[in-house]
Length: 242
Image (cartoon, rainbow, N blue to C red; front, top):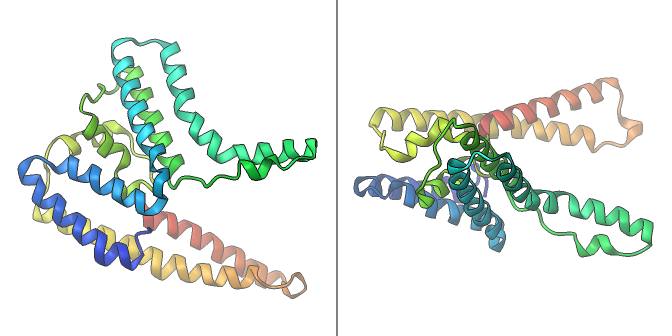
């Protein structure tokens, strides 16, 4: 599910806002965020959601451990453990395919697994949290549900950006909502949606048309237009999501 989908705009987002606003009054805001984020991720990734859950639990435990023992060995083991799923899902197929070619086997097809949505973002976010705890820049969060809400936060789970724990920890611990903040958030969301739908998507159509031409049909001007349109698409797509 992407933020420009009708299912997100007209179904998931209104329900999520209503639930979070209502449950904020009974101190259940971060729990509602956690549940909604897992539902969002399940819709996008399916049963592979276990990778996100494992990342939350492992980095939470690593934070508690490092809060008590500032050991570089504990930090190293924690980082290796957190990076293993990312390395497996991103590079196992590439490595297995090349090994299979050398050994004249079909090992690559065996390890051709689907990449979990947002795995790079939540892995590096978990790593930044563990490193910050080790450095003493933040205290480990002892509330697993609240920490889980931070790491699985659906507005930036799929497309980023990576958010450090110390920049947002207070937002999950206290309620800072107000009508002015809510209207500011809606306006910011609409600005991002405009960048995505009006600028990035239309620039992408131009880029696709240029890149879809046969090589004999591509001159300097066509290549320049295609490259420029693709640059605009990438910039405004990421800017809109952020």
